[in-house]
Amino acid sequence: MPGADEKADHQLFAQIVARHIHVTDTSKAADTWLAETARFAWKVKLFTRIDLDLKQQLREAAELEAIKVFANNLKDLLLAAPAGPKATLGLDPGIRTGVKVAVVDTTGKLVATETIYPHPPRNQWDTSIATIAKLIKQYQVELVSIGNGTGSRETDQLVADLMKQHKDLKFNKITVSEAGASVYSASELASQEFPGIDVSLRGAVSIARRLQDPLAELVKIEPKSIGVGQYQHDVNQIQLARGLDAVVEDCVNAVGVDVNTASAALLKQVSGISNTISHNIVAFRDEQGAFKNRKQLKKVPRLGAKAYEQAAGFLRIMQGDNPLDASSVHPEAYPVIEDIVKKTGTPINKLIGKSNVLRHLNPTDYTNENFGLPTVTDILQELEKPGRDPRPEFKSVTFKAGIEKITDLKEGMRLEGVVTNVANFGAFVDIGVHQDGLVHISHLADVFVKDPREVVKTGDMVNVKVIDIDVARKRIALSMKKDAPVGEQVHLKADNAPPRKAHKPKPPVETPQSSMADAFAKALKK
Image (cartoon, rainbow, N blue to C red; front, side):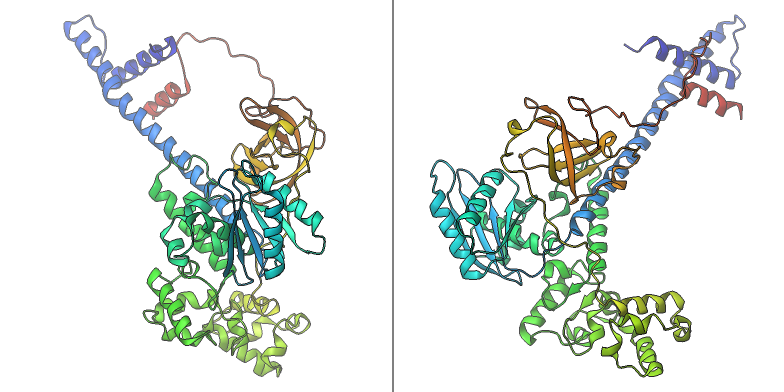
C-alpha cells in the first residue's frame, strides 16, 4: 500500500493538472467527471511515463558509472608493471586435483609442464619440492608465479620450503591474480596455441606469462572475464564491451608492440590492425623471418596504406635497420629528425637518448607546414627516451608468514596486501587469506576521499590494518588510516564525510510537499 505522503503527492499533482486545464468545482454534474479525468490523466498517463523516464535515466547513469569503474580498473590491471623477459615457472594451485606447473622461457615460450600433488590426499610434499627444484635448475628459472586461487597459500609455503632447502637456487616468488586464467585455458585461442597441452595446464602457462608481461597475456582474455568490474553482469553488455575494447586498445597503443615477438591476439589490439591482418603479420614473420624495418610491413597481405598509417607508430622493431623504428615516432615524422641530423651534424645513433644534446635544441627551428610545435616537441621528447614504457617499475608484495586463512587474522594486525579491485565505495585488498578484505572509502586515508581512485588503483601494494573480522559472513574490514580504531563496522558507514552544518527542522506545512512535487509545480508556473 502506498504511504500517506505518496497519496497526498498524487492528490496534489492531480490538482495541479486540474488547474492547468481550468477544471474548477462549481457544483455542476460535469465538474466531478472533469476532476476524475484530471486524476486519471495524472495517475495513468503522466505519472507512469515520468516514473519510467526517471528510472531509465537513473539506470543509464548508473550503468555508465559502473562501466567507467570497470574500465578504470581494467586499465590499471593492463598497465601493471611487467617483470620482463625472465624465465618463469607458473603454479596453478589446486588441492585434490594437484598443482599444475608450467615453465616458460624469456620469450614466453612454453618449455615444460608437470603436475604435482603436495597437498592432501596424496601429500607428496618432498617429491613436489624435488620436481620444482629440478625444473628451476634445468631452465634457469628466475621467477616463480603463484596463482592466488584455492590452495595458493599452501602452495606458497611449498615454494618457501623449497627456498630453504635449496639455497643455491636464486629466484623470487610472486603471487599473481589468476582471474580469467581458466577462461583462457578453455578458449579457442589457447587450443590453437597449445593443441597438445591439457586444458588444466594451460592456466599455469597464463599465470607464468602474465607475470612477465600482464598486457600481452591479458589481451587474450575477454575483458569481462577478468573480473575487476562493478555490477558488470547487470549493465548493457554492448556498451560494456565497446568501452572495455577501447581501453584495451588505448593501453596497447600507449605501450607499443614489438612486431617480432607479439602474438596475433596482441597485434589485433593495435589501431588499424584487424584480426585478419594480425594473423597475416605473424604468418609473414614465420615465413620470412624477423622484420628488419617498418617498411617491410607494407608487404604483409591486406595491410594497406591506411592501416599502415594508423598502426606504424605503435609497432616497434627492436634492433632493426633504423633505430627510429624502435621508437613511437611515426615514419611520416622521420623527415623532421633527418632535418635535425642535417642541421646539427649529429648522426642519428648519437642523437637518440642524448639529453644534453636534445634539450639544447629549439623545437621552433624544425617546424613547418606539416609539423607544428607540439608535434616537434613530442618527437624530441621521444628521442630523449625512445620506446619509453609508461608502466611502473616491477615490485612484489610479501604476505605475512603464518596468515593463511581468515581465522588466522586478529584485529589490529598490520599487513601488506595488493589492491585487486576498486569500486566507488572503496577498495578490495588481497592479504593472502583467500578472501579479499574491504578498505571502505572512509578508511582509505586520514582525509576526506571523494573518489577511491585518487588514493589507490588496481595492482597497488598497500599497508593495511585489520579493524573488523566476520568469519561467518567471510568479511574482513581493513583500514589504511594511521590510527584506525579496531572493532568498527565500516562496510556501510562513511565516517570521513565532511561535517554538515546543523539546521533547524522546518515547520510542518499544510499542503503535502516533496522535491518531486515542488519541481513539478515550479515547471507549471513557467
